[in-house]
Length: 226
Image (cartoon, rainbow, N blue to C red; front, side, top):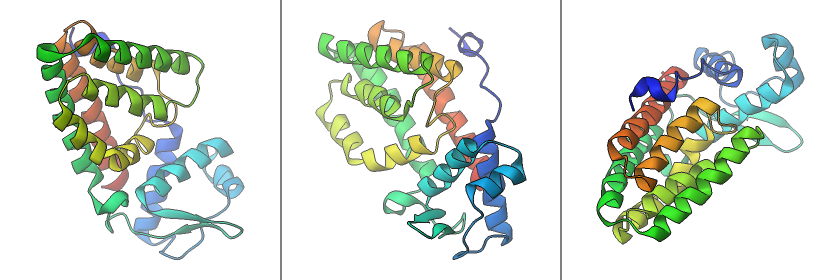
């Protein structure tokens, strides 16, 4: 399988575009730290999109630590794009890079020492994720679960422990990823290719899919945060 086999990545979603434009507003000082951003309704009117799109864009920036919801008061700017990252101030781009390294290693280990139990779990989670995508349901938890299952399939207690220690940061990268809330069919195809590395020993294709997923994620972060 080559890169063309898993489809061309979908163009930038409306929510990602709005998130990027809001980051530009924060960077320019249109909404300085401490400022309350306009309501969902006003932002929806400004950008010509639905309120759920605004909600998803705002959720992305909350996940990055730029916005904070204060109950009864609204949503406020609490950080600049260069101020740092959530989850113990680790760089999200660094977390993405480390995830890629660990998953590529897990794929190669699973080919050498994987178990039927590990394959069964990967297969089960992949089936659930496939159904969620078909139903256009929330996929963040299943996305995280599939990647965790791939790591567990390595059969390495140390690798599993390393990933568990990073779980908070990993979940943060998934929440603000281009497909964090509702995965597209194209991105599902990459996840299926990733799972096939464990299920059918197609390690080279799985590594390629893994690299594509994380490069898309890096591109998204670069576009969002500069």
